[in-house]
Amino acid sequence: MATTRSAHTVWEGNLLQGSGVVTFDSSGAIDKQPVSWPSRAEEPNGRTSPEELIAAAHSSCFSMAFSNILAKAGTAPTKLVTSADVTFQPGEGITGVHLSVEGTVPGIDNDAFVAAAEDAKANCPVSQALKAVPITLSAKLA
Image (cartoon, rainbow, N blue to C red):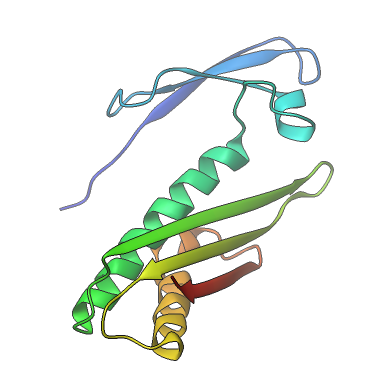
């Protein structure tokens, strides 16, 4: 069964001096978040950005896919800690994503862990949606 998740943004003003608020409509699990050009292109100063939201989506999607791949191989993880760094270059856009994962996985060696992580990187739905940019990976056992 397909699912749809929704959010909306109300933006006021021009790009450089304006600002907006992102609302997470589907779950309400995250409070409304302020966004602005300076929070995207300079320092966050308590505001989020599209790239931070993409990083959150990518780290969680990758973790789900990776845990599933490991479990199907008979080596379910005890713990995975995944970070996603999304790079934004004003004038160019999103120029890359770097995933880092460290895991506690009984019964697996580092080579198998890295191979499964590469599989998750290539095939998680968010990675698939971000195929237009380079995605790199660092993976290691804890």
